[in-house]
Length: 553
Image (cartoon, rainbow, N blue to C red; front, top):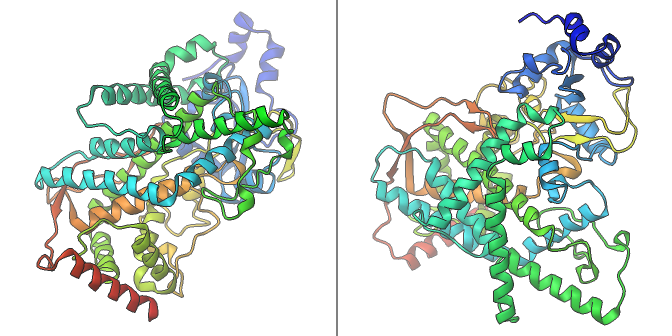
């Protein structure tokens, strides 16, 4: 297509305005020219992360591109991404007024500006996960993975598309975390939730490829994200249910995040009524270091806060629910696809698991056996393959190809370029994971790249599947636990095979809000248990002895 900007300008826009639109703002790095109004959009495919990765060969790790009427700075290499989001995180952690921010009105944790309120919300939700506890989290994951295992047994080795079962499993895990409720596959309420969540995410994916670069009206955004109102309505219904149950019984146990939210905020109101004062947000300790924290000081003083109000609650729960569901769904599908595509890797992982926990283990993997396993892969090359495979699945799968857009909140210099306040930053995680400077043959699936010459698992600085810096994904630790338990369970009980012995699935991705593998089918064939004659107690004794011997070696 040939564009004629001067003729276009003579008819619609003044020539000087066209020149201003084509000129890269002062301080930004160089980049490609575009066309009036659209910028570089006509040259982008449905996978802009691949387009930007290719453009890097011409423009370098950091370049400017105009998308619609707004200029963006694209970061491709891991060095440039870390320099911006980690080393200069204080200046580069804002959120632009993009689609999701405008729909949620900046209220969800992932889309809030990095101010005291955001730090409070983030720390608050981390503390709720800590309060929920490892045992409760493990129990929920184990039960839902057991249901997934039983569903596969009922398929009796028939070829299936695993996406529906995967979505059911992890949706129930998130529902139980957030609402204390699980659903059967045929539950009408569950189908309503699924339908609205799918509509929300699919329309968001379509809109994200085009409309974030235009100043569309709020009504247009609401129409595009057709499932938003439906899923928010569902969340509000669950909130009202919890409020009603709490009014009936204020001593009820805290079994989910909403229970704990109302319990903690009630404590806050009681103390505020008692002391009659509220401290400044800056006086609250926000030094959270991880999903579950490492120090007592990670626990902020929530009994004196006012920023966690119920008006924010639906969008914050939506943030946790949708974000937690979509990423783990994609990661699990990539894991199953990898097992089908690379049967030699699957067999080696199963052999490794047998050496650690034994083939005859009748119960699901728990955090305690997993801890033993983790110790082994750190100290012994023989037990490195499974964790290295999970790392490689996240790298090649690129579940989140772009970090959520960032925005400069104070003037900053990156690679010699002076980025002004308001500059939009797109961190291309896909580009960092496919960079030949950091990864040998990056397009190949090779778990051994994460095992060093001493036989220990190593994680390179270029590895960033959950982004990096102040806005790193809140659910990273939870997602890793879910995937670890789910995949070890399935590989313990099944051989994951292609639908047809002669055909293996493509190991390629489909763009969306997350990047999933091309749809595929698989068969789950039950493995022969060489220790079925042992009782549970005998098997547990045998495995415990084996684990103790391993740890003493």
